[in-house]
Length: 266
Length: 73
Image (cartoon, rainbow over all chains, first blue to last red; front, side, top):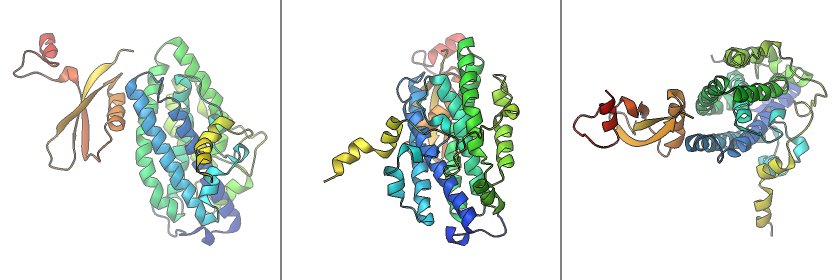
């Protein structure tokens, strides 16, 4: 549905809502960059060659999406190159569940449902808001994300119906990710509320209900009642729009390309 | 893991013949769909589909990968 009035540039948005949109864009871009790294960790060692190839392809998708989202920050007076290559780990705004590497395939599958799922719900909300650049650029990302969703759901079902150990690991991993991810998806602070009020993204409870509609039944297969999970808002970092902590240095170094960019310095 | 073989077919443009472009192994039809799209993505396909190898009925050959299907009928 097209809103009655859209905004073409961030300059047309009032300052508090603009800050909310900038934060949300950065959180989405960082989330996709880290999600790509976590998929890339499973190019080798996935349960089959086909699954590894799919993980590789999804890593490429996520990095492509991240690049596009970072480039949109120009509209907010930020230099995308500096944002991509010059920030410390403590400045990353990704969902906290991606801070550490994922130990096994069950954790990767849990992340592809809980975290990649939340990223897609956030993106959809973004594409339905009044910010025109998001409305025009996000739909193609969502087409690619549909295959991530299908793979995540199919693997989640397989593990949920598989061995007791696989099911236990899947449940534990999903539970460990949910609270912080739901808080990231639906920030309840002033900045988050300002952008919802401006029609830039749906309100937090709406985003949460979209997540529950999409994944509630799936998570119930491992006896998780997602409605009963409280978003973890303790030690909330309003500057980044996420809970405490930051990605590990190795992941950030890979995200920035430190080792090989050093070769370019004269 | 108990995987099955799937054959992958695709056409580049509307009206082109559907051609065989490869195969893959998957646990079920849903994963076969995703693997096919993610593995054979070197072209901008107009249409792609996967067929369980076990569903292919050989017509004139008594050898080759599909002959085993006939033996099972």
